[in-house]
Length: 173
Image 1 (spheres, helix red, strand yellow):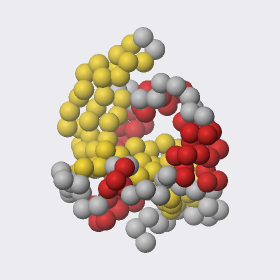
Image 2 (cartoon, one colour; image 1 turned 180 degrees about the vertical axis):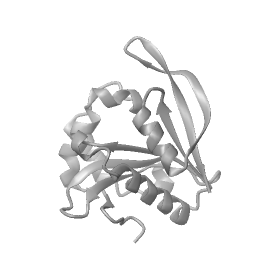
Image 3 (cartoon, one colour; image 1 turned 90 degrees about the vertical axis):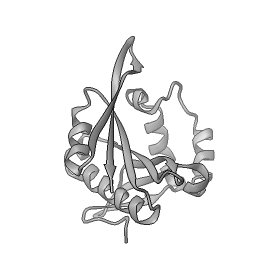
Image 4 (cartoon, helix red, strand yellow; image 1 turned 180 degrees about the horizontal axis):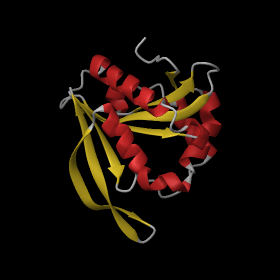
């Protein structure tokens, strides 16, 4: 199974993920990387979950839940976004919920699984990621997997009255 690793597995969104999704989408510390500018209601997120079955070829996005194999507990989300089948590329983004689950290899395993899936099942030639300057954890994570920095978007993100640059990373098959 492409979406099952040694310690985790990736699964489709379910209605019981509403609380996790609500917490994530309304976490203002993550808004700078998601371009979110306002909170989401449970009603809107419930509608999103009800439509999450839609095909990546239609909506250009696939969000998966990262779960621990040992107890099936959800620990984060991983997204494929801006899917461009014509150009054979897709973006990837990841978030791990709690500090206690970070730096344990979960994100590495999840990104490797979703990249394997994208190369095999979506026939992409490349996967890209955008990482804000100063996010050393994400930079190290993606570089360790084999992503290479190929560009810089200067002063791309405006946060707390300051501009931050964003690094563009690619993993090319």
